[in-house]
Length: 435
Image (cartoon, rainbow, N blue to C red; front, side, top):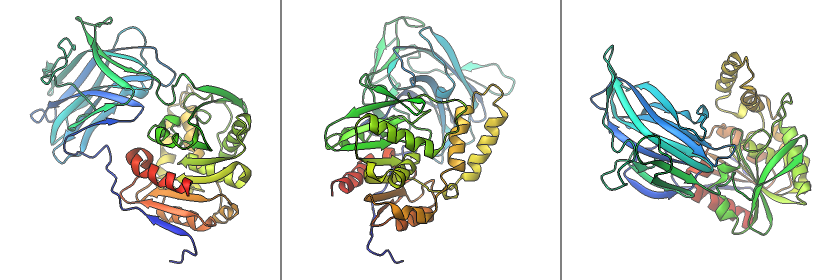
């Protein structure tokens, strides 16, 4: 394969996904969510129905804050059986409410993991956990769980642990956990998980009005501007593993694109990439940013590439990871189309309008040709995992079409490289930006 004078980088690191079952780990994670969980032996309950319930209330939350129950069945082959996290549908208030998850224990099940989930800033309270099972027409029968009302002080005998089970014991930066006496649902104590000043919900965040919407943004560090652009269903918090490191060297600017995170959404206005690059251009103008480096992930990478084409004077160096330039570059495009059809069938009250608009953005756009990339003058790094959601050949042709571009393909890497292996991702990006 002739690569002209371009630099091709192949990394030899192996990514370890958070979904892989490993030996016991104890660490601090950097993410915008936390979990407190307990694992129950259900190897003798295969085929049983189960239900899990708990009381939840929240205080001091922001727009994106979530609190919910979750449950997961682990199987003998180390694969996942039943899994449900109700964060998308659970609506909590300052008052206690009882929530429930129901399911069936899978064939070859070994462990049922139950847990409290919370995301972003807030005070999240959980109490009165219950687990019940039944077989056929039998009555529900309670399964004993450790410290269900958090009355006993946390100790080595307490089976509640930070993390998601699977022997992964991990605290989460900016999140603290305690057994609190503040208005428990039952008894004298309850579980309290607190989070303050997390990326995307920081007290220093501000809004700028552009193009008919209010864009939420946060800025960290000093130096040359570096704009981080998130993916389709994400927000700036997806870069939670990048900000601290990048802000040592750059003025890091993060923005929630329209309709995501804390930014507003224009009902009835089709979401396109042309609309979003104009948003970003006006956003930079209002911040008096003449030129900036851009690191874009997924749709953020698409926006970065389009910015380099339409507004080249605004783009210094560009990193685009997991990006495509036309819809057929996506591996599971047909599955996305099917999802939209399903969402439209259940949209009588227009509750799915934004989600449908987001899906259609990637189903219909962008519509570039490889030759269109030839006008890019910014020094560019194209990145992807070797089993990304973007076709490998598509990524390679993008790289070949951009003058003097560089390419980084990460073995065993998916579409979520920045969060799966932030150390490697950050090292590659910073080396590219510095030299």
